[in-house]
Length: 94
Image 1: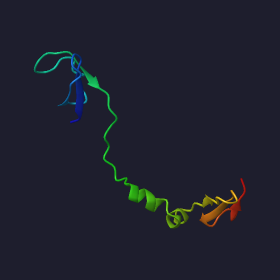
Image 2 (image 1 turned 90 degrees about the vertical axis):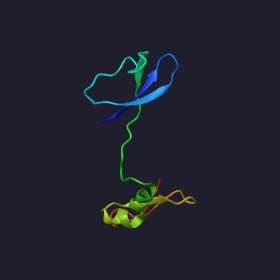
Image 3 (image 1 turned 45 degrees about the horizontal axis):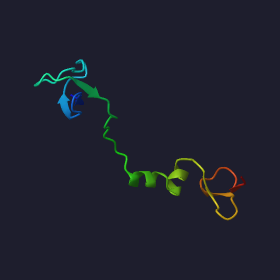
């Protein structure tokens, strides 16, 4: 069951309550009866994404194996040189 965050309207103190998704949001504190509101937060999703995996997936070898072409900008000339992949021209002009 999900954990919801509620806030006391008088003091702004927050607390968590475990309740079913099909239950209505509480309007009163379960112990004291004080008025409360549910706080909307971004979801906490458990994913397998890490910065190290992102770096590996964007490596030139991985990009080429996936069938994509990757270009990087030359800071001196401003042109884009192909660094990964077999398709497309070797250089692109801006």
